[in-house]
Image (tube, rainbow, N blue to C red; front, side):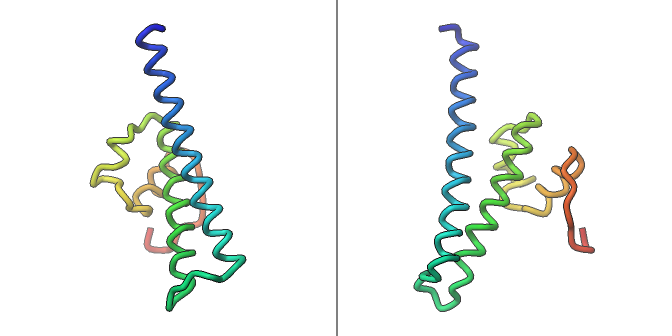
Length: 102
């Protein structure tokens, strides 16, 4: 196998791992929503966290499709800052509702 082919295969594998993680995160939130069994004093917090994380992963997946590297997405520029991620994704073509302070 050529080096380029190996690199392409590694890249596809990383993308698939990200999609799998995203699906599991969203599924976990749905299970918690249905059962209501979180064991927390504020039972909605773990659910919100999982949905928030799923949204972050969707935004990062979109940016990966537009050439951003995992290193760039993990940097301080983006990190877990969903507002920055949302703004960048909006500039690239996905439009959504954004609070007035955006």
